[in-house]
Image (cartoon, rainbow, N blue to C red; front, side, top):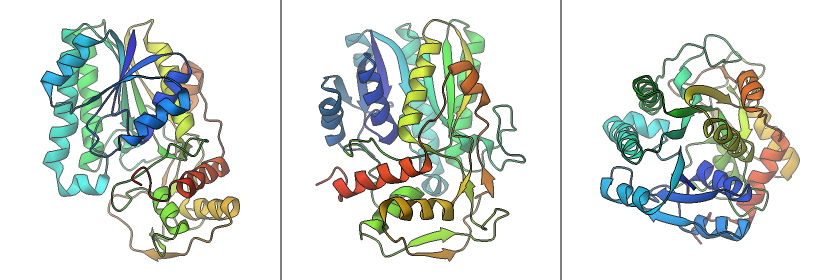
Length: 337
């Protein structure tokens, strides 16, 4: 029996593949490589000393998806595949809705056809929109404020309706906060195409000399230093959360939702200072205007994941910063060269 990992060549997907293989699972990876590189697949095998099947395909490609299910004995699906840039989603919303939502519908229809009814869905803290209270619990109001976040929210609702219509499904919805860091080997990490959408890859590019300085969006937030506070979680801790969710969904049926974060908020300036301390690299920055939709504070209440999944993030902010730098230093051009 194999675990199908959609988007398994991506940043979070690749780290989860390593944890799955290391824990003894067999995996099948499906990825269209639109935001990832084939090199990562070689490195997953190299680090785990295990081989796996890979299909280069899009979830919208029903024919290849059928092939994946007919050629493999799939037990469960971990569904990462999807477009994920908030800014881009505002510019091309129809593309995001079609890709993320229709792709998931095609996946669910194919799973149903082949009687595979166990899924972990990669959701996001974006579904909470502008939180009224922090820490954010799983029962906090849902109100995504950008097309990317809305695709995640719509998919959560679709999966809820799917379970209501057929109680033989077993689904875990995992709402990630802010994944950063990289594999401790320095061989696997975040390799954004073009200008990074996320803070840590941008800091890395400043540290390695690819960019002159970091733009910090806003310094007048209601936080201890005026910059936005977020819940940063090491990507390896996040990957391990998927294994705990998999252990939960395989023997049972039902649908449940879990926040995956550390439960601690750090500001942009906290992150920069920690990075400078552990790497001895100076990160020049300037303050610029706020971005629309950015909130003062967002961090998770992780009580539920701790209690039900038996999972807790273990790595520190210093670990996240150092592992990010190690990846960048070892791979100044990412996977590309």
